[in-house]
Length: 424
Image (cartoon, rainbow, N blue to C red; front, side, top):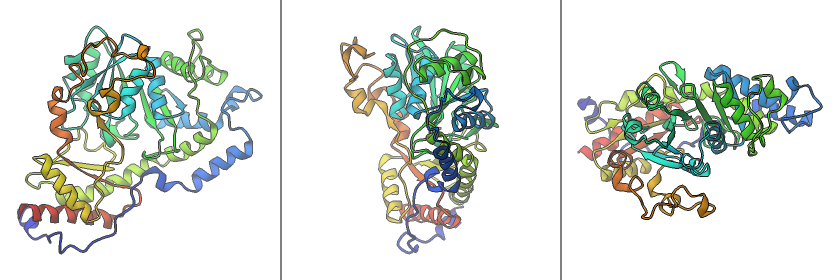
């Protein structure tokens, strides 16, 4: 391996290649989406629930999207909603998370993981990540209190969390599990799709995702009661006849919100769902080209993937020994027209304004209102040594649906060239 590295050209001698265009599902929108959208327009039924039709004929696109999601993900029930964030709020409501409750959530996660919990009036309890960039085993046990209701396990950027460790830990603590699969739809863990492990899971169709409808989301569950609660929460407390066909009602109406998916969104989402495994296969193929060339370089430690056969392959991460080295490496790759910016926004929650200022739409709704001093323990940078150790030292290599094998080979050659130049 070292001999191969020495023989590589330096960045100054490697021919410069054009920067490829980033993008996943949005870049493959085509005739399939067009035909389904036109079918909705021609039907003149943009709203999912059409009372003039029999229950089995209402919401053709949304119903088909949900049934195909169930078949693909291996779950009993699915529900289309307005967004991934909306799916989180509906899922938390289904789990009966509310004021006074606590939800364990990785400190390194998307804003909605934090804000959805706060919107329920509950308190996000921030947890450490490990070298998988997902929730670290042991954190559930460490952070659980009598107030803990749920643990939110996020599968970060195409890689499943270590579910063999986390699920028994959550069950031993008596906690329900919400899987956030917004960044990893289709990813697998030992042959099982993410979202099918916990009590309820969510996916996103936001524009940067592997499957997109611009906006939109899905939630899945095997529990008929959670399904009914989710349906009622997403539709003003109602449980309309199409859902009765899937699971008879067991609970009375309650005051819900409005998170319904319309038929236009469902049409695009359906076409994209059918392309999901193709996106995954393409990105995994490109990822393998790169990893075959750069794995084993001394000083580069790759993100640990609990199930290497199950990840989605659209982002490669490796760690360098220091923040300065990671920043320098990234800068040199950018100069070679290699994209090095992670596709989806993810942050340390304790460094974001909404956490620093603990602000909500009204102070009375804040789960932090009784904290005399802020930031309180558990919301300070110094409380997360493991997370801090990982999130500043990585180099990210995103891939996309417009990338070619030649692009992947160029990325690998650029990494080797920068590595050789830096080492030399």
